[in-house]
Image (cartoon, rainbow, N blue to C red; front, top):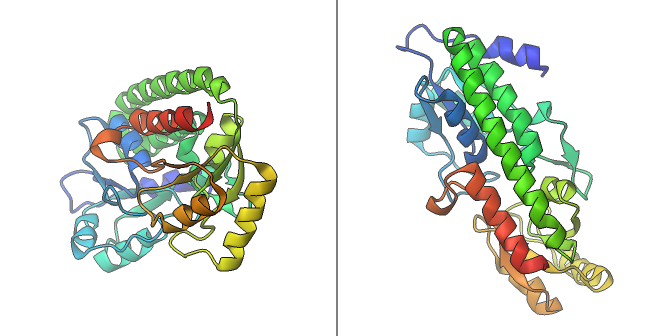
Length: 280
């Protein structure tokens, strides 16, 4: 979908609701939308904190609440396809689903699939803020100047975040890592790290014995600094690999939304703090 087409779709709103309503599939994108929207639009997060965005099983109340939305921001790129099922079950005929990921130069993971986790790159997130601003201006034109001002503030905050990470990244003297699933490729590309292997190529699907054996060989050849598990996914395969190879195991949360990661900046600083421990 082109940006122009997406915004044209976003402009279609319901006349039955008292005002436009917005929903967002995952926390990192939600934090951008709610900050741009300010107090002008109600914005709801669909995926509860702590649940895996790949395998989310929506509840009836998720569908019921989505029925009131006029515009739904999604990542796309295969990450949150479940939003289509929720919208269908909700009978949300007025809701338009706007996928942000395809507009932000998606990159390939090591296995050749598209990595949807664009938000782990603060530079791309500055561009995402512009996309959100344009979509909200089309939904609610009268408040357009307000959304632009808020968007500029968000972009400035994300620029400062990127600069702070750039200052810390050179201290990571070891650059190779193993991730639990393909969530850190954008972060690695931005800050000069190398993801040499992924424990669980298909999130939620336990790796085969053959894959684990190949991982052991890859670890021996490349000598990565650390292995990272994720709180939303079963850590047992990562523990097996760590035990087999002696690779230090750390936990990194790529999704956020918990009390400790209740803003995009906190989410990213948590990732950087873990890298400081693992890579120096």
